[in-house]
Amino acid sequence: MAASERGDFSEIPMLDVSGLYGGDEAAIREIASTLRGYLENIGFLYVVGHSIPRADVEAVREASKRFFALPEEQKLALKIDKNFRGYLPFAGSTIVTSSVATVSKPNQSESIFFMHEVEADDPRALAGKPLQGPNQWPDEAVLPGFHATIQRYVDAMSTLARKMVGAISISLGLPADSLDRHFDDPTTFLRLLHYPTQPKEEGLFGSAPHTDYGFITLLAQDDVGGLEVKNKAGDWVPAPPVPDSFVMNVGDILARWSNDQFVSTPHRVINRSGRERYSQPFFFDPSMEATIEALPVCVPQGTAPKYGPVEYGDYLMERIDKNYHYRKKLAAEAGDA
Ligand SMILES: O=C(O)CCC(=O)C(=O)O
Ligand SMILES: [Fe+2]
Image (tube, rainbow, N blue to C red; front, side, top):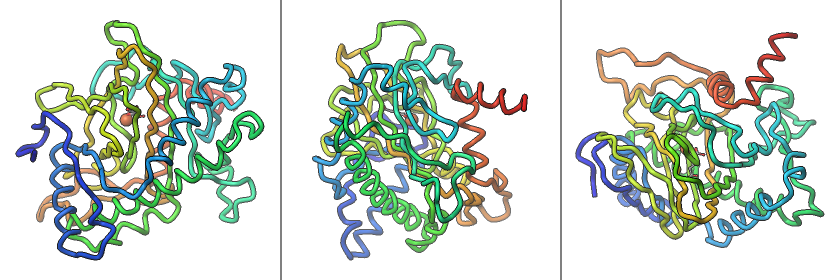
């Protein structure tokens, strides 16, 4: 299925990226060209044929289930901190910057965020800078192997994400490595999410309609379903579970970088399955200090870029501060000081 027009889709297409791992230039160009169409018209696709073993994805899901099954006080010991690392309790975020809906009820989920690791003695002296700091790990005695499982997955997902950065460059007619320098110290988030089954109630969501902030998202979900993507007609198109796939989508900074050539599409989660749902989005974003400025290849001759340059870290801070209750409290306290 190829969408002929922006937003005109009734299912999420699948892209086999196995050819990106070989040396066949023609095959790579063809995958990149198909990718471009999906990113321009839908902003969502399923990535299959990647090299991440199913066992690594499932190990994270099992680790996630074990974590969320812990008593609340043990989870709260890792409560999300000023660096955006840790546990966000049930109903801890309301998306207020959402341009897609007036959102008032908190999301029906609990989650834990692991970002790129920044040790306290980081040689780049990053610790202490906004959104830079160590992750909060569950006690090894309580959840043996948890840290190693997550780290292995983050490494594998980063490799896949870099592959996709290369494919995106090629899709725009640029050399494969042309965006790489913006990802020297990528900002990454692995979010483990748990959605209890929710009651049927107007305006209640597992994840309220939103767009993602960053560059790309690569999401693994269990077999429950509930993710939906909005098309031009305003219909919510299901993105049901597909074995061994990642749902990939364009985030707002990629849309902005591409001068809106690529589209960051609203999506939401409603879990009325009667089962618990677990998902694990991986967000792969530019370095905090990267300056994101419309790619010349995306700006038609004789027109001005739609958006000015922005430092990724500044942009991200602003988005995060607006959306999370706990950060509003932190921001208010900082304002008092
Ligand atoms: O859980 C899902 O399927 C989607 C999660 C999501 O959209 C997000 O965390 O940004
Ligand atoms: Fe999302």
